[in-house]
Structure formats: C-alpha cells, structure tokens
Image (cartoon, rainbow over all chains, first blue to last red; front, side, top):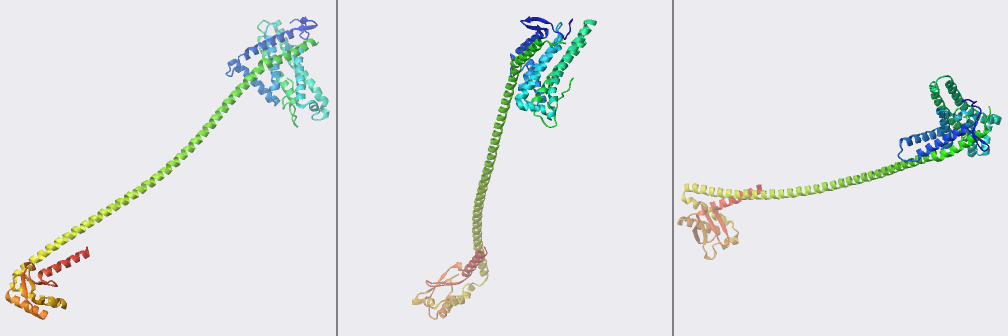
Length: 235
Length: 249
C-alpha cells in the first residue's frame, strides 16, 4: 500500500468510467456471494442438511433481529438489511486475502451504503406513512424541531459512513504500518482483531440501518423516541 | 481527501444489484423453504389435531357405548334378578304347596293310621272286655246270665212307643228273644210273664241262643229291637269311645 488510502487510482477504464479497486473487489464479493447463494440454495429440501440448517438459522436470526428492532414484518426489509450485513462482513474480512484492500476501507463504498440506507429510510417512510405523513414526522415533537430533524437525517448518515470507514480504514492502516515495521507474522493478532472489528462493524451497520428505517416506518408514540427506543449513538 | 464519484455511484449500483441478486438467489429460496416447512408443520399439526379430535370423538363414542352397555347390563341384571326372584318365589310357593300337600297327606295318613289303631285298640279292648266279662261271668252263677236281665228287657219293651209295642207279638206271632245261652223253662216263663206285663197282653216267645251276647237278652222283631245284654253294652261303650276319640282327634 504505497499511495494514500484516501485517493483511488483507476485500475482500468470502461470508456469514461474509471474502474477502481474497490469496485473490482466488490464485483468479486458479489460473484462470491451469488455463487455461494446459488450453491447453497440449489438443493434446499424440507429435511435440511447442516449447511442448509446454518443458512436457515442465519435468515431466521435476521428475521428475528428485524422484527425485534423495527417492530414490523421482516419481509420488505430482509433483503436490504441481510445484503448490507453480508456484504460489509465479507468486505471487512477480505483484508485477509493478501493484496486485497477491503472496499469498506474506502469512503466511497461506505458512502454508497449509507446513501442507500438513507434512500431506503425515505422510501419506506413515505410508503408507510404517505408523503405528507412522513414529512410531518420531521415536525415531531414540535415544529421547532424541523431543522434539527432534517439535519439529523444527514448527520446520522454521515456518522454511519465515518464509523465504518474509520474502523476499517484504521485497521488496514495499522496492519500495513506494523507489517512494514515488523516481521511477517507480527500483524496476525491485529488481523484477527480486525476480523472481530469487521464483524462487529457489519452488525452495527446493519442494526443502525434497521433503527433508521424502523424510525421512519414505526408509529410515533408520545414520550418514546423513534426506532423503538433503539440506540442512535455512535460507536 | 477527494471522493471518486464514479466509484461511489458504481458501488451504490453494485450494492443495489447485490441486494436484488441475494434477494433472488438467497433470501427468497430460504424464506420459501422455511414457509414450506412451516406449512408442512402446520399441516402435520392440523392432521394431528384432526386425529386428536377424531380420537376424542371416538373416545366419547366409546364411552357413550360403554355407558349404554352398562345401562343395558344393569337393566338386564335387574330383569334377571326379578325373574330369578319370581321363579324363586314360584318354586318356594310350589315347594310349600307340595310340602303342605305332603304334610296334609301325612297328617291324613297319620289320622287314618291313628283311627285304625284306635279302632284296632277299641276292638282289642272290646275283645278284652268281652273276655274279661266272660271270665267274670264264668265265676257267676249260670242263672245270672239270663234272670238278671229279664226286668231290664221288660222295661225296654215298655219304653217303646205304643204303636210299636202293639205290633210286637201281634196276631199270635211269637216274639223272637235271643239269649246268651239256652234258657230254662223257668227263665222262659219268667220272661214271658214280664213281657206280658209290659205289653199288657199275652204273647208267645221264640227263644234262640247267641253266645256273643255274653249275658243278657235281646229282642229282634221286624219292627223293633230291644237289647239288654253285655254285648249291647259293650257295643254302646265302643261307640261312645269312638265318638270320644273322633271328638278329640
């Protein structure tokens, strides 16, 4: 890693479109996830194998998390939340592959995911409450809060971006620095820690996505914050 | 720090495409198989509930049938008990009737046997009395067997109604007189005199002998009979004994 991680150099170009490394890695992750999904779901049966049971456990746990966090049917949100979690998790773990830099260590990937969450918040909020009903939520609890609520939408999206980016990028930096200073095996504990950090960040990103979207679709009750009382804080 | 907007856009598109791909190839199949399994489980539960309901219904039906059988059995037992009681009562009544009949027959037999025995005893007593009387008479003078009874015979004739007495020895017909032994001429004369006096006319006597009289005289006419003998007394005594026994039997 010789250049600044904050500057992306195109690997090649498709016409005017520069194709950078995070895009390529993301494509590889997409291919991997789709291939695994096809391989696993090809022979689903009512009497599950161990792999199918693990997959069903994952989906069932995901449904439970969505149901508990958003207090809503998990059907409309399952694909988005599950995909975000799976992609972020695999992307964070891609640092284990030599020469590969996690896409989530770049701001563009995190911003893309956060913007998708922001768009999903608007989409599900409007679909659930209607346009006017959703806009009225910005005036809760009083109209004085409208500017703060609008700002909150973007600040929490920004915090979502920066949280993931900072955690993953810092891990990559630390491993790179130690690898350049010490021997080959020294960064291994830090890489293991990065795995843990990556898993935790994937979970946090998915949970916060559920909280944000759930706050948009949940019925506002007096004296109770949006999102079913889930944390809004930053990690 | 710069942002590569092309990369941001491509990553956003990639993420959206990945959402669709995983929804198509991962989540939907898994959710479908979960729904199928849940439906199958619900089907099994429904079948189990239906089977349970059917089993409960069969159980209730069996219990009802058992109760009905028990009721029928109880009724049959009651009917059988009633029949048995009726048959028992009939048998007891029949046995009692039979026993009463047997007892009546036995009592009748006993009475007949007793009567026969008493008759036999009376006969024996009579025979014994006759024998005793005969033995005692043997010790008396021979005249006493006739002479002592003449007056009694005359009194018996005198006690007869007048029309009867008028027919005794009428028209010259001899009056038959039976004695325990052959009467002497004196005894015949004494007897004739006594009867003439009792009938207030003259009659003839036709004497005959019957040792069964033991002692005494008897008249056996067609229209009257006068007995004045030990035999008559014994017969009278025997008849009295019979009446006494029959009265106390």
